[in-house]
Image 1 (tube, helix red, strand yellow):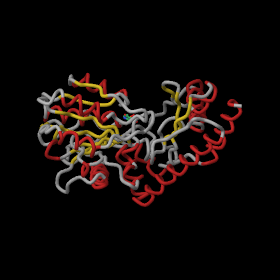
Image 2 (cartoon, protein in one colour):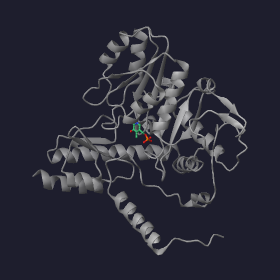
Image 3 (tube, helix red, strand yellow):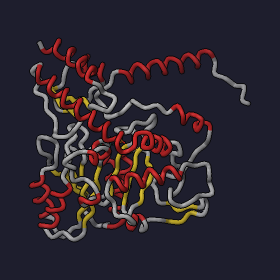
Image 4 (spheres, helix red, strand yellow):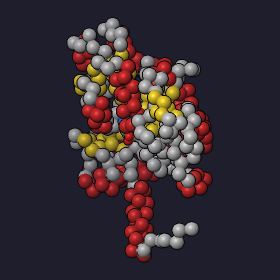
Amino acid sequence: MNTNSLSPADSQILADLLAQVKENTQNFMGYPVSKDFDFEELMPFLSYPMNNLGDPFVASTYAVDSREMEREVIQFFASLFRANDDDWWGYVTNGGSEGNLYGLYLARELHPKAMVYYSESTHYSVQKNLHLLNMPNIVISAQANGEIDYHDLENTIGMNRQTPVIIMANIGTTMTEARDDIAKIKAILKKLAIKNYYIHADGALSGSYSAFIEPRPAFDFADGADSIAISGHKFFGSPMPCGVVVVKKSNRNRIARSIDYIGSIDTTITGSRNGHSPLFLWYTLKKHGIEGLKKRAQHSLAVAEYALAKFKEIGLAAWRNPNTITVNFPEPDLAIRQKWQLASENGWSHIICMPNVQREHIDELVKELSLVTV
Ligand SMILES: *Cc1c(COP(=O)(O)O)cnc(C)c1O
């Protein structure tokens, strides 16, 4: 037993941090992070050095892991995203950005000479990933609601018809949660007779619950996506950032390399991989089940609708994309933005009605907003 303990001063620092984290978690509506989770049952696992290094579907000599749960999580999403029965594979990532990096990496291995197209509303991490992968790319303009401009996409691809195409589609942009329509994008590729292409769906927030919406947005494998990345800490909720990427198994096989040292196959991006996060995701999926998750989505959509109506009532030029949980409104005072941790861009702010957000929170925010607007 280790008898070392923190000095009183360091214990105080820790206690202060805990108080600050608690306080700051209470009031935020500006970032897509669910906070209604309880993982008490999983606490004993924090005493073990869990690590899922290597491929989740291939056993490793390192056996303190949660690979079995990780496989179940991937299977759940492969089925939710309508992947072909025998042609799916994936892993639990460190977040949506790693899933996007993985999708682009696979796409580049399949089409080394391709041009990448993505809209100007794309998450900032995508440009960094393209830089890391050294992939040539063209930014396409976005419509006012944040969705990709299909005319610009068609014209731009049309000018480069000899080049294979990689599309990074947004299933819910960061600021306005706009969804690019994968069916429309496929139709453009068909019209231009592009033979070699790859479509990756960045579904960080919105892809996590789009399968529960009617009419179902065109975002998954059945609609034409070749890979999909989501974040695990956004809609589902997790104490640590995590995510899921699902790809076609046939594509993944092209990059697999066998590594003696770990007794597994190296198909993922990092070496060591979080062995706890798959367990947290698995627990969440088991606890809620499909019906519970559907209810969470419906709750969020209803609260977003409520918020939009309330904002309009006090005269704000608020709006939202159909079937999304993000409500946009003109950027309020700094004090309000700071209190509720509201992200802003080009004079607009938004709240994101994550499953933990209730009508009372909206009422409180609206009350504060109305005090400064009159
Ligand atoms: C949050 C987000 C990301 C990044 O995901 P992380 O899980 O934070 O790495 C990428 N794309 C979009 C649209 C996002 O909203």
